Image (cartoon, rainbow, N blue to C red):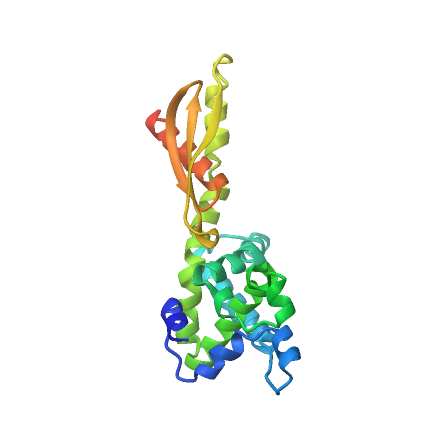
Length: 225
């Protein structure tokens, strides 16, 4: 557990809380020794995550209407985001799973990882209060907010395409030139080509993000930003 605490950036006073956060129902059902699953912690963690994110985006975007706040929060606390956070921490490695679930790939299953991440939030909260849970959550969410806002306010690919289309004989293509890192934390590099010439390069945690960053660099070099 020491290595996991190091990844979390938090040392538990009551380590049993962290252990409980890692117990999947398949393990508790299989062992049947009164070991509780992480379901109750997951329930609590979901609420704690929601209030932390809601408070932050409410204060950060004072002019944003309720509907947009709701959509932004949903994108930040969705299963895709949470399982990504869990993979950054390599939570799957530390889970207690039943034999069948383990053999069936449970350590890398999105739903299991997302639930475990929420359970860990609750464990930190119960051990150290909101003062401990909030910085843990925000360490992950702040990056997601920055990327979400940029991705949804500036579509650099469309802007570049509109400029290039002024000359019908010109064409733009995006080429993946690099992919590195483990599955839970990959980074992609993309070049944008104007005909056969490289006019920009970008990187990101997804191919879509890398393409946007390549287009952004191209626009900057063209003096369009």
